[in-house]
Length: 389
Image (cartoon, rainbow, N blue to C red; front, side, top):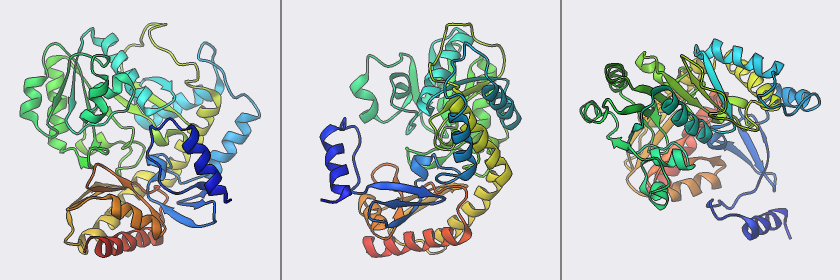
């Protein structure tokens, strides 16, 4: 009996059922490559669901985790900590924001922005976008547009959430009122199909929020920290949001999320997290953010992403309706279902993501080499020609 069979049998026996499994057991990763239990290599264009910005097992992150694990793993925020203080200073240097709440995931960061927005404004209304995805906890799923995620939990999710069409300022002007606490928007809708925000839309939202006293909150969980070719997706519109949510790659693969905002601090006891800001995650985040800065990750993502888009568009198969993207966040909208393409890519040694039933999503690590980028483009085009013809 193979290791894969044993592993899959055990997981199938005990799993919650919340995840649809692919028939693949991954056991190791380095850089942009992961290996299965049979020793087969795969180019990981999922980045572990957008997490592995620096690829897998980046040496600086590994070293930081090892050193911190031997020093102090956990220390709640009721005490000061040297690693946490260092991370705050580094986050301020990169983001420019003044306040931070550290948690354990992007979804928790969304829960944080909802509570902090209520505390700072005293209002209840929230405006989000159609096609949006912000997470699966109750507050986050209330912002998420997809009824399959939201409807089973209606009644438990926040009241007063209005969904407007993405990139539609006319609808936004109607929805944002004096009762609106915040507008929560993605700089690029990832799960919704890889739709970049129109810069004029983000600038218009900024103006509307200023006029009506609402907070503009940008979900940068997938788009932040270089993914789109800038440190943050909102920077493509040259605006300053009131608050951002971070997660995914912030700590090099160690679970972490963060809320960043300007202005006054919230009152003690209004929010908290047992593991939030623990020294181990903070050490990993310091190493990850430092490595991203040293790599000049935004510039690299812009250059390699543009090369990938040019390669894909230059030889765009008839089976592809549209290719959208920003930096190294690329979506190919197909004329048919995406699942056969995902399966064929895996058979050829490339792992990719879906974004709905018809969109192939590519989120490669920001360390992707030029040769790996060409291999990714060649394989995607080859599969699209073979599978969809």
